[in-house]
Length: 389
Image (tube, rainbow, N blue to C red; front, side, top):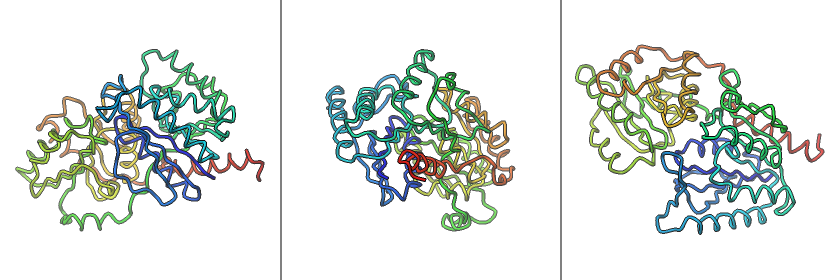
């Protein structure tokens, strides 16, 4: 098969990394990954080609789309993107089009997606199977009734299946979308999408020069756009703790943290505190850690579950997504939740001391094989559509 994946990371990087994990699972097929956010230095599998549309980003309130290149006119970029998408499909003629989030989100990209989807249904570009790739929880919409009606209409008209990357034992689509009964295409729960956690945590601890009795705390903020206050508080809390009994802190700010904020955090570096923007070895750090402190984004939460590391999360307050996910996992005893009141040195230091007393969790029974299950379902559906056994 040839598969085109469409993923637009307009604020953070979680959507993109979840899509990449699905790309990796599709290793027996040719994959074209279409992105259109800020450029990231990614190492792609050999079977994946990336095509970058002219970049567009969303502001932190999710209210306005803007050019990542300040000298470009938004409407001009939209025309270029729409034309480039059309050319890609005319040239590649994919068997499957996997669309991340839309039509449940990314309404700002209707200008390029709706004409393309309509064309695929009419045969120009050549028709293919179209699936929606959806995370576990949807964000609030101003006019939920109108939004949900439009999403259902779009799904039923132009899509062939809905792949929900969640375990219904934790949360279901109905929690944040009321019109699932009106969806006429197949709805499939794949399990959560998560990379495999490295088994040898000892090798990472050795690489970091950690003594057996030393505690390692890993603090992270996803893409970095909105996690600055959390990381500032973690560093202050660890500095307070280290005045009595030192522990090691590794901070990952995310690639999109403002440079001045990154420099401010990095000024706190010493032999016990290290600050970096990003690492491709994040799962290995969690496997080696005694505690994770982070936002409650999809990818980070799944990495926490896979590693079995004790965790404290501070959900992003701008929408309900992270709060609902954190609450669902906290009810199962899999992590603790930080409030805004905890984000100062003394109370957070107390939370950290308490969390460091917890043991690593046993292997969870929550499904974390979403990428592999997605691959299997797409392959089976393609064979069925082609009339193959």
